[in-house]
Image (cartoon, rainbow, N blue to C red):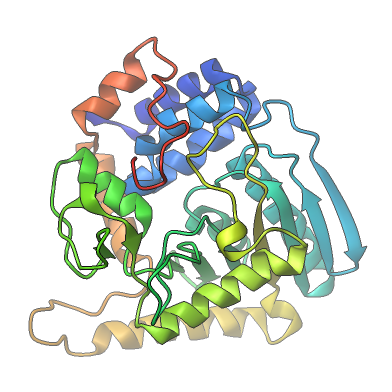
Length: 349
């Protein structure tokens, strides 16, 4: 089934509202999920709606959270999320970080006690759209075998970065610190497709191509990936006084309880470090020079971070966003959830 971005947004918003969030919150959740599907990041789009709906309906996401932002210094603060929607908390916290960056040059906001927030690219792009540079990191539950280890300890712990240029282009870098995000495994399961044997291992610790047999994910670049996971967990967990490593709550166990996740946004105002116009022109020059590099064998050109996502968005704008039939059927149904996720092992769904 192919839908326009507007049609998909409305279906997601309606379902999230019916699960229990207010119209304002549901609209923000739908913004983030539709953004992901429109960029081709389907692992963080509509495929997640039923999980969010089940957690909301069971009370694991506070439907009327008491959000509170506390400035702890001119350039930093804490956003208390009250286990509310991660998409909403992350959006509001980024707005606070942007305000401080515009006033003081840097804005750093730690988010405490939030739920899953989806694609981090959405939040860092909020800043880049206003001529700011942003970095965001977020912890997740343990599902990755650290380099040299045999048991999962860290989560996929993503990192995102965005910066503006002097034209319509924007650098957007968003990655999990695993070879692939868990959501990509979910997407492969939903399409009944195999995964590369470099993504994950099974119960015996051996590489697997069957997404239903995944028991743990693998870090990128061995020890380098493990180091990045640790860095993210410290910045978005330990630094904020939250659970870390293997103590981070499961995404799928007991959806009636809050997740208590942490996230950190750091926003820089280029105008406090250099001439803003020159900064943006230099970014554009960098992108131009990258495009001029002769492609290696097997490639047609050098792509900068975020470029292919925007090309997909333009293509989907013309052809529509394709959804797996099961996901479309769920979105148009009267069903809120069918207890697909609660109390399951994190690798069960």
